[in-house]
Structures are given as structure tokens and as C-alpha cells.
Image (cartoon, rainbow, N blue to C red; front, side, top):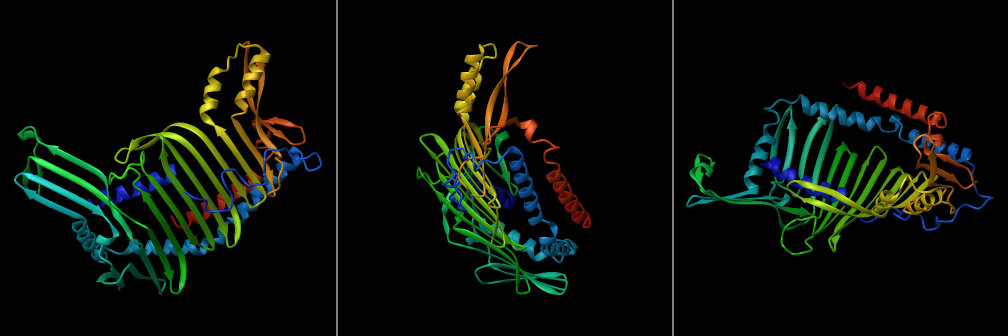
Length: 439
């Protein structure tokens, strides 16, 4: 039962994350304000070769900043912590089992009367007993008290403290319900040896305003994760329904000198779903990657069976890597799909080219450098005629500010980006070697 409630909470968080929040960094879905739609001037235009070099150098620098040597000490700590818990036997972990069973009883309210069973489950931090699990020679003991959940253990002779705290909770929102009445003896349900002709079952969740998990080794904070949650019951029905309501989540994780932050928002307006998301990744104070996106779509499904995006409409997005390479774009999926279906490969050259130009207008994706204005490269569509089939088709191309143009395959290939691919291969091998040591 606990697993089911946990699944409900995870589903809520995941659904909001997938479909949804406010910007976690300075970049917006439209990119930086100074990087408009104008092409870089002739004097500022970089050749395709110069841009290839810029992309490779930036990619290799990013890999260096993500090198395993930068975070292996923290990773080693967490591996040793995980191994320590794995070595403890069932008796040593019995305190957690007893606490879990007690929590299951706390979240469930059940009534049985006149052949009817009513069960209400409420997943909430306020229903979880707070206190400290402390290890002593391989055995944990639980001491109730306080406003947090703590786990104190020992790794390599050092005290490790894991602390979970949370903010104020919302009211209880319904996430699942089943109201059932038997039509025959065969339909009766059984619970703890008793039979019931009617059965009401409802699951609720109280959403905390925030959750924080801190992991300390001695006085050193090895990692800290915080998530803020905001849910708005837009139609006031007391239920969580992402086809009607609004959800916001923002998170921040700090570990090994890195900081990852993300923010997301999801809401529905006039039957259409809207989402925005942003993320940033730092090493110390150095921004490695910043990204943001927003879009709209039709979404089908429910909390019980999951949600699915069915008809994307329009999407905007932007990314910045090390402040050296920026890309941004808008894609009108709905119009592009419509126009692509209208393309007739047997049209005349002029008519096919005109319709393809309309399709290209739906795809506005460009690359900039060093946060400067003036686009240096952008995506385009070029028609070609196949003499053997007698039909028109088109290639996706990269057009450069210096006037050159190449197909995606011609520009982004193994030969052009050999040094970056080698750096990536070396980075992957380092990771495989590092993790292989712990198999």
C-alpha cells in the first residue's frame, strides 16, 4: 500500500515535470534579447569552417569540465555509502521496517460497517513519524521526536547524516477513487478474512510546499537537493487533474561543486495544454549549460493511466553552452505538418519550391556565438529533383552567414567533427573505466 501511495506522488511530480515552470536562469525560450532574426553582418560573419572549429572547441571544453576527476571523490563517497547499507542484514534494518509498517497504518483510515468497507489513504509528510534512525554496530534504532527524519550512520570511520525536511502542506487532494457495489456473490471483495458487498476506496495526497534532503559527511555537505511544489486546483473540485489544473515545480541539486537547477510549469487554458521549462548547470560559478523551452499541445489521459501528448502545436526553445555557443528556435508543428501533407512531389518546380518555402517558414532555428547578435547559421529546406523517380523532394540544410550552404549530413559528419568525437569517446571510456572498478 505504501508503494502505491509513493507511486501516486511520483506520478504527480513526473507528470508536472514532463508537461511543464518559471525560468531557472537568465535565458528565455526566445533566447537572449540581443540575438534577433537578423543575419550577422558581412564583416562579422564566420565561415562554415570557423563555425565547425567553434563548435568542436566548445564541445571539448565542456567535456573537460565534466571530467570524472572533478566529481569522483563525491561519487566514491556515495558508492561507499550504498555499499555500507547493502552489507547490513535484515536485523540491522528492522527499525526501518517497523517504521514503514507504522507509517502505512498512519496513512490509512478504514471503516467496516454493514457489509461495506470504506478505505481512505492520505499520503502526507504530516502523517509520517519524525525522528532519528541511528546506527550502532550494524543495527539501527529509531528515536521519535523533532521536525525532520534523520539517518545517522558511519562510513570509513566518519559520521554520515542524512536529513529530510519539508514545508507546510496543502489540503488533501483526491488522486484516485473506486466506488463499487457487488451485483452477485461472485463479486464480493474480501479484506482481512471478511467479505464486503460494497467497497469505497479513495487515495489522497497533501503536497508539501518544499522538500529538502541533505547528506553530510562529518561537517561537509556532500549533496543537497531541494524541490519546491505548487499546485493550483483551477476548477476547485478537490481533485488533481492535469487536464484542468496547474502545477509548478522547481528543483536545485548541489554536489561535488556542481549545481543543477530546473523549473517547470504546466497549465491548461481553453482546452489547450501549455508548458514551460528551464534548466541550468554550473561548475562552481561557471555556467556550463542553460536551456529554456515552452510549448502547447493537446494532452490525453489521466493520473491513473498516465498522460500522453497527442497533438503538438508550437514549441520555442533556446540553449547556451559555456556562453560561447547559443541556439534558439521556434517550430510550428501544427502548421508544418499541414503544409508537409500539402507538398505534391509531382508539382512543377516553381509550385513545389513555393510550397516548400512556406514550410520552411514554420522552422526558425538559428545558431549564434559568444552571446552576440546576428545569426551565424540556420536551418533551411532545399528542393531537389529525382530524375529516376520523376518526383520532387527536399533536403534539410544548414545555411551560413558567409553565404555557404550544406546538407545536415555534409556538415555534421564524422570527418568534420573527428576531434570532438575522439574527445567524446575518451570521456566515455574514462566513465566506463571508473564505474567498471565498482562492478
